[in-house]
Length: 295
Length: 202
Image 1 (cartoon, each protein chain N blue to C red):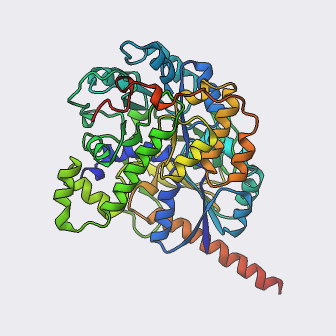
Image 2 (cartoon, rainbow over the protein chains, first blue to last red):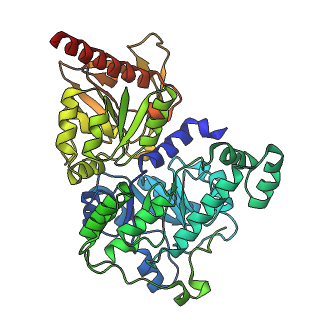
């Protein structure tokens, strides 16, 4: 199977190295340094964080390469960047820039409503969002080396990330009970390749790391997602839309490592100041939700 | 025998799986007190800046330093960086447990990551080892107390000073258990030495 190919091993290997860590959205070299000093395992270089993309409206595209380069020069940890769903030319540009991971992201306006990028063609690894197991396995079939929940980015509201993580974990648990004769029907139902369904049945997990994203704003949010089965946490708008980004970044890093140490989480959560205000999902009209982008 | 795996961040579960396949008891170490139960320790792959930050934040730094003075420790990639005496391009401190100078991310960014054969100069089975190098460091200088146990071409990639074992690549990402076995033997040897010393005192 393709999991054993050297190229894929190197891609999934980097995702393994990011486990138990926090990946932070940043828009400037200064923010990137704050993230690195707070213990982030990687940064996502963006022109605008998701909350501002949401507020700004219009077509959201790949960031200005100048922004990405400046952030690459500022830090030693891996630098990720986002391209639009299906926009393989943006991905080719990001690969040329030497970004360490590409997020084919629903936070940007999709470029192709039918096809995601053929990620096997790239040397750089990809992370993709999902809402359920079928979506996760389709992205892995396309070559994604890491999966994350979609959540609802830029809301500071964890409810959608919880829904997506629970959906994935529930379906994984169910599949582990299936017999051989049930796998093809299950693959049909999920819309995913039968080899991947078999892998999940045999191993009780995805073949790539499974991270949480979309709405994480507090140390307790990070602990919640880790306890629900996330292996790392992306924090988008939650840090640099809050009152005290450095303190909040440090606290979320500690809460992710020590996600079962509630005394410590209580201690690091003290006096962090205002979290980002956040949005109730009912305030967001259906057509403005990001999680529904891609399939 | 019980071997701890530092579980602050990184691919510690892969090391845990490798040790389990060798029937070794493991403990995931996140707190200083947990080190007392360990006869040896693994520092996994991950991000070295994050490791050092979390070691400082949770008061693991000094306990880890003294652990490295007393017992066998194995570091891979970021683990090797943290164990080195000198890192030429890093702002953070290291434990200085093995005399080597290293350069972080020495091959470049992720697109320069690769898989290559490592020649082992240790053990019975000398077949090439599948070396998975991910944003890997490079060993620029090997101190007089340090022995090279594996090379990629001319380059040292697996080194030891008898007590510390360190690799610039990731044996935990392959199914080959030879390097983990080597470390388990180091821990076994250390335990036997301690028992002999205890008998001598009686």
